[in-house]
Length: 215
Image 1 (cartoon, rainbow, N blue to C red):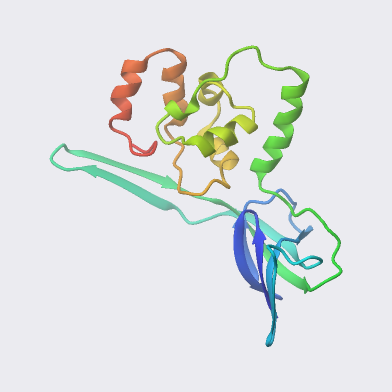
Image 2 (image 1 turned 45 degrees about the horizontal axis):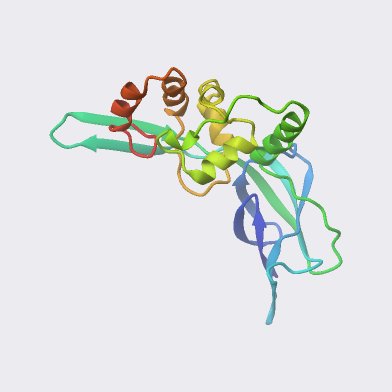
């Protein structure tokens, strides 16, 4: 028996006793987690397809450990200009083992979410308790940030260039972990600082050398 289930923003084909690496979950090591967004169940010749999810079905798993994935190297070179730049990225992951697949009767239990979701929860009360009087900046002017990332950062309480400038690149990567694509955040705080200081000419010159926020 196997299932296709959504876990931490990704879809996996899983079976009992299988080990899976997913985006970092907030659950502690040794804790059990339940994923109830099951899209397909197959037991021999019997196949059940959800619309989009199967009501009552769930995948139960146990958190083994938290770790970081292999380093991905991003290398840029400009011909005839002597320009070379190498960056590395390691994704934060959680290793889980599938303990059981429940076909029906499972209680709706919220799966452990990536840290980005927790950041949204923490940011929401701040907005309600003390609305900001300063106007939010257009974070899309930072090379590498699109509408979806800007929306995710705003949900985490990062609304201005100053907010982004004082946020570490590693923390930004955690917040946008569920946004599709390979995002290198190394230059974003420095870009944001230039924008916050009003050094637009200097920022524009630098951005002409960047590609998606990567030097």
